[in-house]
Length: 361
Image (cartoon, rainbow, N blue to C red):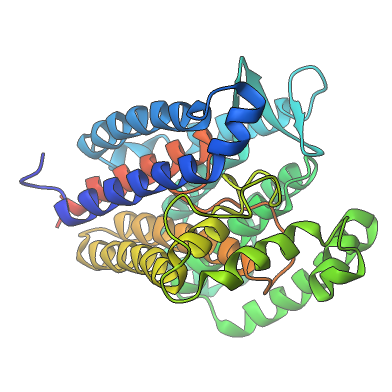
């Protein structure tokens, strides 16, 4: 295997994931000790998913990625069924106000995470099969946008605004790269802006997030609490940080710091150096992904590789922007770093597909 796949990308992802597990321990040990009397509770769970993820990544890197093209409709159908089932009371589990999980014992599976990769596979297949029709908006572009729109609505019914935005931004970027006219995207962007405003109006909690984003100190103990504590973590980090395990905000100030806001703890403990390390990791992963996409010998491989790379970078960018207060809270995790089995498995599975594409040069 190591003689064929992109070894540099493989090793980089392993290093990133291990660093993520180390930071999960740092961020969660205090809370885990208090709640479960086990400081390693979250680390052990994430470590288990990491091991499963490695096997999945290696296994998928050995499967001809063209199989995903053949089974794209089936994969999309399974994702649709899962996203529908999770909305049914008694089947889907509510966490943090969102019915977006299947609860299995102490673990949870989030269908929207798997829908991300399923939609990328299907869109890559569609674009590669209909390349000539993409200049005709009605015949070539509208059909795929309608399918994406259906999945967007299903995810918004949970509601999971963060995952929905990652999917929309990733797939629209992929369609744009395929050669669709930019004037069409300007029109779609205007419609999308109106839609986002409507979504904010119909859900008061989203308006609260907008207000807390603009001025979190209006409600420092309510909607603005999380972002304020995040900024309190990032500010003292300085150039080199407070030191590993020396974060103050993880002591019951920043809620669940091992999940969406783990970057705050990294910034506090490793400072600007930690910020550079994390952003460089994602920049390098995207660089290797683009390189693999350009060297792929078929359109499906090109679209699939770059689509996955774009999705990872967009998700990471949204998370970092939330943590430093550039955009409202979305609930998007930081790939490879944030605690969460579904997110880690999907991220490592996605890399497995890219590694498989890297063999077809």
